Amino acid sequence: MPHSSISGSVSSPKVDVVIDMGNPLLNLTVDGFLKIGAVAATRALAEDTYHIVRKGSVSSSDFEKTLKKTFKEGAYWGAIAGVYVGTEYGVQRIRGTRDWKNATFGGAVTGALVSAASNEKADKIVIGAITGAAIATAAEFINGWSF
Image (cartoon, rainbow, N blue to C red):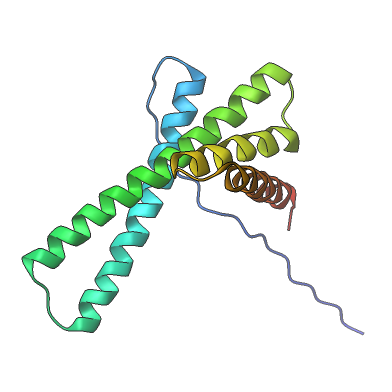
């Protein structure tokens, strides 16, 4: 009986932004800020473009609102990514090992800071830390899988 097989791989695009700040921690933090900030800005731009097209007309007010939202979302999510990447790298350097625990700590710190910056109460800050840790840990485990 004939036997056939199909093989392949799934990989994500690799985008490198080279900005040398003279320090690996700063380099990674700025890189995370720029990459995730660009993704968030693009998402905000696509969302507003969809709403404008659906409305059927565009005004200078719509354009200005979209531009502000795009930059605001990019800066917000870029800052969150910068905090996460910087924290994870800092923990890695302190511990001397690269594993899921660094991601867990980085996610917890980032989640807590985002909640605290949003003027949340202590319970919400703890929940933000738990959620950040869980998401970061899950992402680390998923990135470790090979297909």
